[in-house]
Amino acid sequence: MDHTFCPGAKILRQPHPEFYTCPQCGGEVEIWTDELKADCPACRKTVYKDSGMSCLEWCKYGSECVGESIYRKYWQTKAVGIKYRLLSQLGSSPEFNCQNEIRMKKALEYAELILKKETADWHIVIPAVILLSTGMAGQNTGASDQAKKILHKLGLEMDDVSRILKIIAGDSALKINNDQNYAVVTDAYALTEFREKVRKNAPENQDRWIKNEFVTGEGRKMAMTLTAGNTISG
Image (cartoon, rainbow, N blue to C red; front, side, top):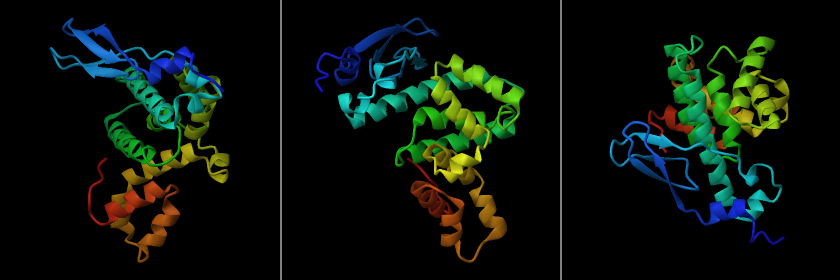
């Protein structure tokens, strides 16, 4: 199929700079069309642009059209925007106390590292990790409705919202069906508690324990790194 004249693909395959005004100092900030943010050269504030919907989000030829590398980069960039806007919306929410916010940010770090190695959806995993640290997680209908409103406000499609809500509700079918997004989210949170679990339990056969505790190959690899007393970095 010839996608030579697809305008959505052209923007990503042949990116060009656009210019935005820094909200802090009023300076001019250059952000390329295949990027979401850039630092203001004058005051160093990170400036984000609004991320509208691309044809890649609904076109069944998306990855074929622009190539797998560009396609994955698009969704990774989209997820960064979702993370920024979701955290901004939650702000100083009472459901977001200091303790669970620290845990969530650590889980986000682990999730992003796992996502670089595993095949999963950035725009599903990242908001699910964030919402799991709020009172909107679980199977309470009122909490689910609140999460749904927030996710719709972020511009996510109905199907994507439904997938995120199933993860934060702990839908058992996701585990049974080996859903990769669910696996990344659960491994990311398991890693936040891993050192403490090792200290308390100190199982004799740690390799087997890690294999049972973690679902993704990268999650197991990171757990082994932590077991050895090393830190994890990208």
